Amino acid sequence: MRRLLPCLCTLLLLASCAQPAKPEEAQFFAMDTVMAVTAYGSRAADCVTAVEQQVNHLDALWSRTRADSEISQINLHAGDATAADLSPETARLLQNAADAYEHSGGAFNPLMAPIMDAWGFTKDAYRVPSREELTSLLPLTVDLPVLGYDSPDFTHATASLPHSGQELDLGGIAKGQAAAMLMDVFRGHDITSALLALGGNITAVGTKPDGSPWTVAVKDPRNTDEYLCVFPLTDRTCATSGGYERFFTAAEAGVEGDATLYHHIIDPQTGYPAESGLASVTVVSDDPLLTDIYSTACYVMGAEAALDRWSRSDGDFAEFDLILVTDENHVYVTEGLEQNFDFRGEQNGYTYEIIRR
Ligand code: ADP
Ligand code: MG
Image (cartoon, rainbow, N blue to C red; front, side, top):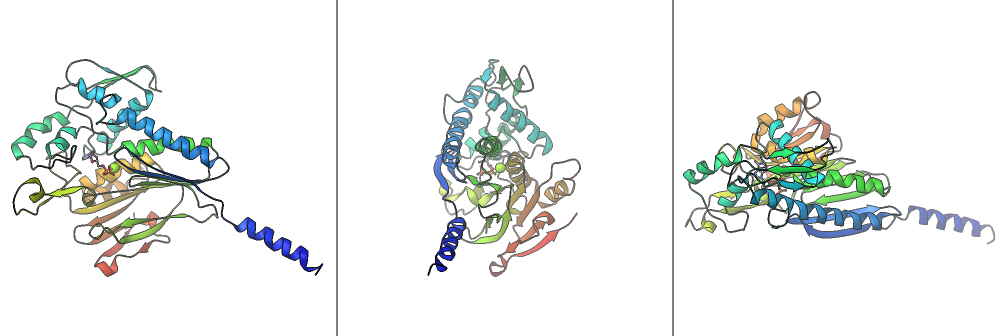
């Protein structure tokens, strides 16, 4: 018995070591979507609180629907030569949005608000605007805001929109910029194991507490209750853009008997929902900002242009990986995701291929 006792103690000790740490978790609504954070570590509780505070702070600065946000102030004074004062955070967001516009050849456009309004997405009062109406709004999406600031860290920044009727909509970049900024919050709390979901933008901080990678799934865009694929994610962000996320039918907008679908990602060339042959685009990269921008931009560009951009991504462009789901049920997966990629779309009629450089 005496010999057994130390053995038993050792076993108990081992069991307690293997016991996974308890996560700290929070779920909240911000930026028009559901946010969730899970973090492990001795300072995880404080970290989770700080994450929620930071996201709410950024939402208050960037919301288009809150009259007192900095973005609303810019929108309110469009065309009247009054520049709005900006925090460095907002100035950086606008600079990044301008860079995204340029790098995506205009596929990512932060000035789509008047067009989103025309389709009724802003107030969930859907309508089908005429081609003439859309054509008359397109010129408002061309000239980007004029940004002024003192130094590279955006102190004393201001911004104005040159034309009356122009309006910023940063829905395609705000969550990515927020996630990028939150990496400092995780680092500042010594967190090496966390998962952050800002709507469909998922960032894996480090690994799970046991050292195994976090796992993420991409939805089947035609059967959103089912997974198309599952793959590991460590210290990277994954974001999906798809027409299936937000749409209405012409019938719902009052066009009797018309089942045409209209979704929320607009082709800036036409003002119509993008029809590039893709059902969804998933981007994976170690930069949360780039991930968010490119998921929207590649959805607008279509598979050929997106894969062309990807093929140059270790040269002219930052590196990222893609999962492109076509309207013909084919899935392109770039080679960086090949390891432990679990494809589950066969039974729903999908085929897939790995794309190599
Ligand atoms: P979500 O925000 O639904 O996760 P995305 O990241 O793809 O999806 O962003 C889509 C949002 O971006 C739209 O709801 C709209 O606010 C805005 N948007 C629509 N079309 C464009 C575009 N071509 N470029 C940039 N932003 C866009
Ligand atoms: Mg996006």
